[in-house]
Length: 148
Image 1 (tube, rainbow, N blue to C red):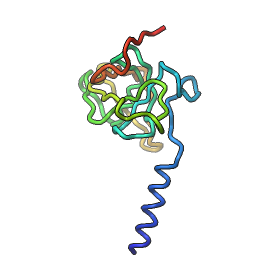
Image 2 (image 1 turned 135 degrees about the vertical axis):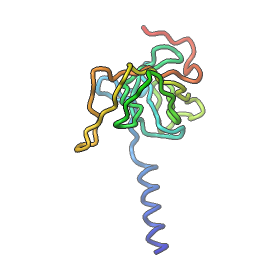
Image 3 (image 1 turned 90 degrees about the vertical axis):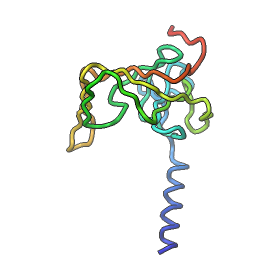
Image 4 (image 1 turned 30 degrees about the vertical axis):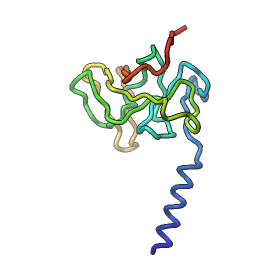
């Protein structure tokens, strides 16, 4: 029993450690090196991006509202404070970036009454017309950033 558990654990660790991460995406292409695109990450040490986002200024990113997760939740306020959502530096390769440079998302501004509805048959979020959110960061992600 011990050997079987050990083997399963080692396979799991190998798959997590050596599987290809999902990078930020822009226009359907990998956005590693693109200074406009950041990755939204669940957990400080994550190497897989939940969603990509665009950097608006050093402390604000914009992305889809469904990226915050919580499928099926109806938000009764336009303000949501996530617990463990982070942003990596623009254009980062999540395999090799310095996690010390990541910045925590402190607050998310949603459209009033945003409903994160999901389809139970597929498990996918049903995209809505108001599927946009502004992610406010704990501190500036980069200095002197300006949209061109």
